[in-house]
Length: 285
Figure 1 (spheres, rainbow, N blue to C red):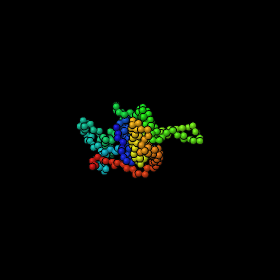
Figure 2 (cartoon, rainbow, N blue to C red; figure 1 turned 180 degrees about the vertical axis):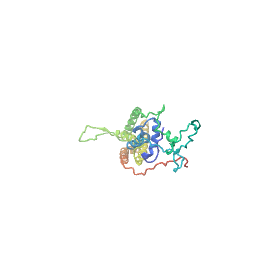
Figure 3 (cartoon, rainbow, N blue to C red; figure 1 turned 180 degrees about the horizontal axis):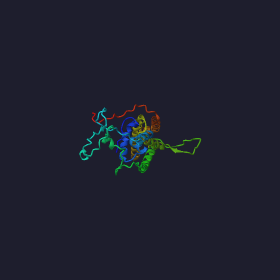
Figure 4 (cartoon, helix red, strand yellow; figure 1 turned 90 degrees about the vertical axis):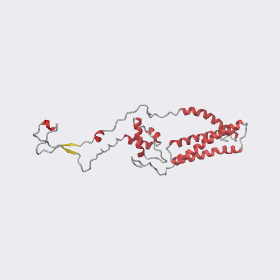
C-alpha cells in the first residue's frame, strides 16, 4: 500500500500525483475522492485535483536511442546484382529499377514498439478494496464510558458546590437545572472535538498543534477529575478541599476559552510557507 507524503505543511497536489498513481496500481482501480482524502489527509478540492490528474492519459515516454541527432533512422537497402539467381540473393527483394529511388525501411526501436499504450491494471487478490472502516463500534464503547464519566463529573461537581439552580428567575421560576452537568458536557465534549480536529489533517498547522495540546490536556484533566471524585467518595468526604474546588470551578471558563480559540484558528488563513521533498534521482547521494 502506498505511503502518504508526511510533511509539516500541506503538500501541493502535483507532489501527490505519483503516490496516488501507485495507490491506484495497488487497488487495481482509480481510488475515490474520499479514499484520496483519507489516504493523504487532504481536502476535497485537492483530492479532486489529484483524481483529475489520474484520469488524464499518461504521456508516452520518448524512446531511448543511442544514435546521435545527426544520424538518420532510415537505412537504405543496397542493390543486388540482377544477373545473380534468386537463390543466391538470400531471399532479398530485387533491386529497384534504374531511375527509381532506393527502397528505404524505417528503423524501429524495440522500446517504442513495446509501448503501445497504458498497461491494463489487474487487481491482485487480497488487497484493500477501498471500503471505509466502520465506526459504529465506537458507540458501544462510548455508552459505558458516558455513564461513568457523567456520574463522576456530576458527583464531583456536587462536592465542589455545583448543584440545583434556577437559571430563569422571574421568567420560569419552576424551571431548575443541576449546574454540575456543565462539567461533563464541557470538558469531555471539547476533548472529543479537539481530538477530531487534530487527527483530521485538514486544518492549518497552528490549529492542529493547538488542538493536539488541548485535546491531550482535556483528556488528562478528565481522568484526574474521575480519580478525584472516586477517592473523595471512597473516603466519605462530603465537601471537596478548596484546591479541588478551585480547579473545578475554573473548568467551564477554561473550556469556553479553548473552544473559542480553536474555532478561530480553524478558520484563520494558513500563512506558513509550504515545503516539499526534493526528488532524488537514481545515483544521487
